[in-house]
Length: 292
Image 1: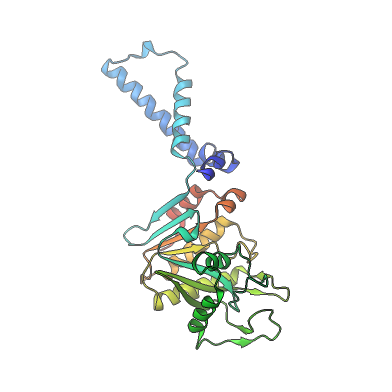
Image 2: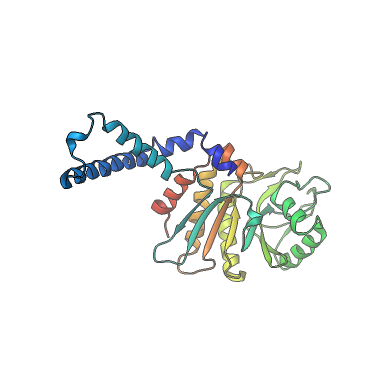
């Protein structure tokens, strides 16, 4: 509800709801429909044209504008189902940990979990996961990561601030908490100051590896994915564009096979507000430009 109210004050909402090409088409279509209704009433003798004021066009136009605005109100989720396929895309503003199904957690190539040293922020997805599902017990997360990473090729980085074993971009390890499965995805690196950084290519490669891992070792559950790389990955790509890239990457991997019937791309409410994310534009992309 807070996002809904604040969206009304954003320029992007009004641009889309009233001044975009689609909005103008909808307004003219509504005016045409109302005019047709007037003609029909005149033809049936219910309310003849001589009773209309010559200024009737203004309330008709106002009614059309109000109708279009009401039908294009701010939303917190959009859904697109692929025609003739049991595959659904959802883009949602909210808490990723409140979603059902399996969840993707972006991490660095050394799979560090230490929050006590400040290497991993409690506000990051990893930090929130540790606090919400493991009561801050990162030792249990480390144990499960070690099991998942056993047998995976790695290199030793003696200068790393945390763990010394470094894995390739796109490495995935499962972590379970109750009936929830989390896929830790290596898509960033830590520099000598402990700051994470990534590139758009890293994210693209990591996503490709993620879908392959889930296809081979997943459970055919619904998937919830954050906007990887746009936060601590420090990638200079808009939230809208990253949403599109994640959706298309999933679509490309789903050609000829099914490893999940639903992908939910989660956007943090504060990011949606700060960067004026427009879900209407994203849904337009999914329905018009997504190749699958």
